[in-house]
Length: 467
View 1: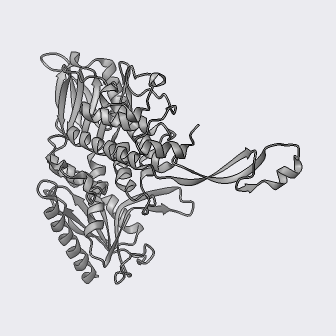
View 2: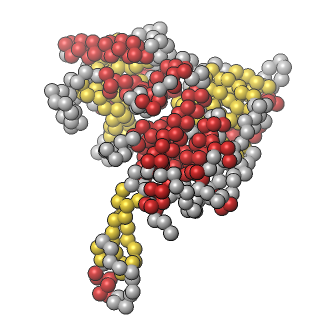
View 3: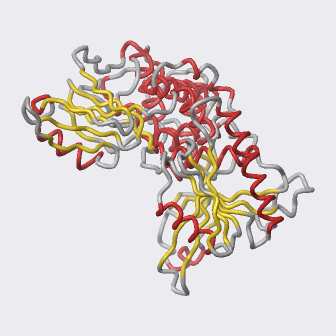
């Protein structure tokens, strides 16, 4: 019987093994794993079953904030109720009377992506932002821009194609890492052994001298660790989603089943993919975990279609815009400034009320050094920035920004919008100056970002001089 370590090394060199692989159903009528004479990682792609795409599929395109009506009989009541229950935040559904009879009115609330409703019907949510700019925003928001594995993605013609290519990139890179051997680490274990290993539980041995096996505490080197489990869970979710071309689905399924041979399958959240430590032995996991975070955040809640469980792919444009602006500023802010994203503010001694501020810009007193100390900025920030993915300024926007500025004793509050407002804001509210700035998403993102940064820094300097 091979140990997990020997098994990983043999599979990494392409040798055949007879190890048992967990039988976790992913797709309809999966190939029985117990009947496979070879490990799944050595099977040809053509032997792995996948559902065939439905040529009769009808896709309804919903442009952001533009209502569209369809005949009532095109969407059964049960489908409408499920759409309202699970995706009501993304799509608004109402029944409208017309001269031709009752019709469903669908409204995209500001999301991008695809929702499969039935085997014959799906919803494609189209934002008003150009597709190429959405790709650019995603690369900044999930810190993918610096990774060389993503070259050529700007040629995609749809968001589904973009996600398909990302899934293929993740599957191929996991397969490459499997060939090299998975990253392993030492984990603490406790077990009763015939011989002493690691540290012996001496007290128990004295209390129970008749016991043949000794309780030992030791560290075991294994590949069944969180770094690899995150990859396995993400590939498992993508495989169940049924996204992409047949070639991509085959590659995802192959890598998924190969990983499950020696990695425990357990769920992870998008937060588990960020804030991890990387070094020379696992540095290539960083882009893979970034891709995992991308998919785990945007694969929506599952629902049943026939005998398959389908995961829609959805992107909340408001959250994407917020994260994109934050990551863009982190990359381009001068060294004399320091940015905090989603800073938490507690109200009152009991801290029963709390909220998070999108962006807070501080003075970086450690700017003369190559590294930035997070605790080196002053308590009083230069300004707070609240991003708003909308076209028109509202009173609630101003109220929220003022509350943020007061909570941080900031002299300047900035509202960032993706398009110019009909009524630009530049007013004083008590001792706080509130202004609106545009980070446009229509043209070149880099040029728009430089214009936004220049305007923001000018307003910070002017407001500092006026105090």
